[in-house]
Image (cartoon, rainbow, N blue to C red; front, side, top):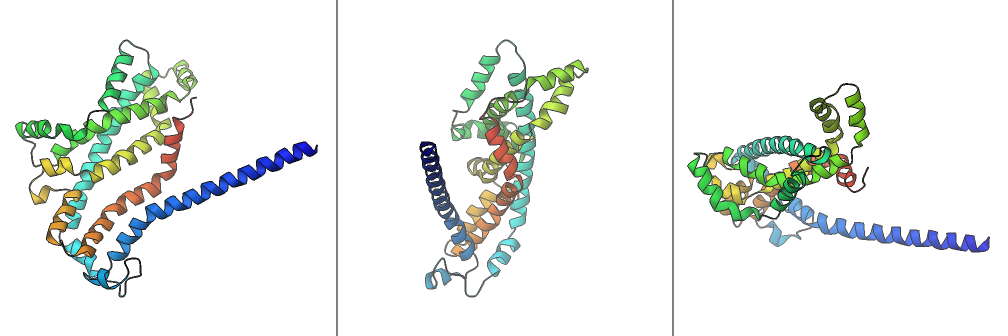
Length: 286
């Protein structure tokens, strides 16, 4: 009896030590990731030379809001809404195409399924920026150069391999008995997909939306290559433009960065539960 109590005490002590280490590492990681954000936000409320006179992590004295007024009045929302439009259309198309591809790859048996799946996975290894020149020539030949439509194709194409890979693994975890029961009740493949599989795949779709949404929101290389007119440029290009106009005014640049990251932070806060479910669902089969 004493031996069992001793073993229990040791296990409890080990568990407490493990939790303490986990909490310490989590707090350390929180400090590492939060420090640049705090630096950015605090210094975006300073005047141009206040960063040299005050500590960069001290509260601004006084709080200077004209940096944000300057950013907003210089066309920030135009860049912002163009980025929202490109991200929204790209994500909708990506989720539609990836779900259409993942369903047969995960739920049906047919010839060349393994070959097609291997080809899709192989596409994940293609560096995105290797295709800049071919895509530039293609969009020029198609008359799409210097338009927002020129960005949607590359964004969707490069998001599909990873999305199909993740969504296929996710759909495999949905029990087949659900589909079989629906088929007994007269539900065909079409209804199975839209009424059963797709609703059950919402955590996976949310994960893909956040993952690809952040990547598309921050994408610079294709936007810089395929867009030229200022009235067509997206938010990442606005950051470069503000940096060029206000090279010595660091607080204004930090104000632009703060406004740029807020939508992604809000998106993550709203969908964080679905993101965690989507990431964990593929880890355990069945």
